[in-house]
Image (cartoon, rainbow, N blue to C red; front, side, top):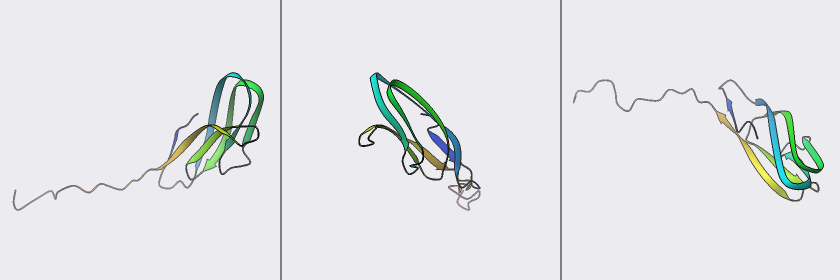
Length: 102
């Protein structure tokens, strides 16, 4: 699955990206790809041994993508896309630039 990480700048509230998922199985299976917390995004395959899917998504928290059976009861694989907020805070120096004990 790509991407694995989404980095937000300080002025960004959400991550807008294309999620690309790909799976393979040694035998034909009927499976569905779902995005947790976004039930409107779901793609299913009937009796396939592999599949690919791309979808545009917008999210502000970690996004979990799952490959499930067609009844959506059993999770066969799960992958998270981590949201990292880029902090532009300046690090404080460990000591002052001058010292009377120098």
